[in-house]
Amino acid sequence: MSGTTTSPTTGTAGTTSTTTTAHPVLALEGLSVEVSRTGQSLLRDVSLTVAPGEIVGLVGESGSGKSMTSLAVMGVLPDGIAVTGGRVLVDGADATGTARRSVAHRFAMIFQNPKDSLNPLMRVGDQIARMVRLHQADGPGADRKAARAEAERLLGRVHITDPARVARAYPHQLSGGMCQRVMIAMALACRPALLIADEPTTALDVTVQAQILALIAELADETGCGVLLITHDLGVVAELCDRVAVLYRGDLVETTGVVELFESPQHEYTRYLVTAGEEAGHGAA
Image 1 (cartoon, rainbow, N blue to C red):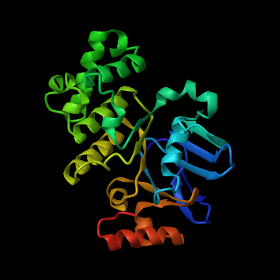
Image 2: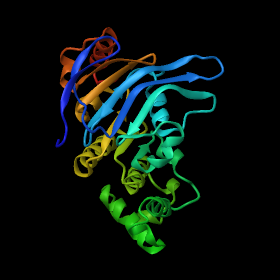
Image 3: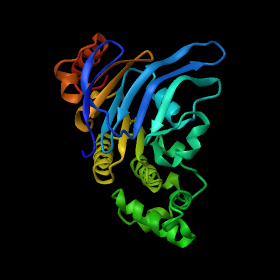
Image 4: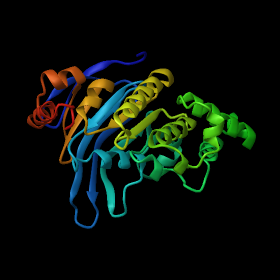
């Protein structure tokens, strides 16, 4: 990876690993999130980076703060929950609070239930074309016909056969795996520097899961976008990720390489996750 350097970092629990730190596409600097009315802390002083072309897994049990982290990065926290400390930097630019508007086009998100994220009243090709027109006005988004052609090209890019036919379909006419590919095509239309994938294979069968994960890895390699992959499945981490960050009740307790995660986990909670995955026999935390 060009233009990068590595240096040791220390997590909340004092664990140390070598991580890529130069020119990150995402940098969380002491991110803290609370429930506004009660002051309940949901995330505390979370710091991590994602470099260009790097896939970083964010793992932990349900309620550990994984999805809350992604929502804070995207600026779509639920009402009554707010960022109370730290910064979110995307491509080196501050994306915290109102500053987010200037860099919002640099990141995109894939959700775990694609059919819930697509508009059921619009053909999928029109939905992708809308993203093209919003984010590629200097090129294919210049007119509707060109945007539609670009939408079909993007559907082909995510390995959908007969993209012209699929572009005319409504979400309910497509399988879950096809809808997830449509969501990835929409993300690509944004030309993101950062792609956040929140449990992107949860609702898919095993074969389709493998295809979607391979596609995400392929896109990170070919486009150079960084990926923050949120998952509870350590099997997915082992297959796809370069590094992994472990959340426990809102604290980032360990950040390490994938090999180190399985061979020598440092934090007690990380050891528990690895052991639980081994006992389950499929890597699920």
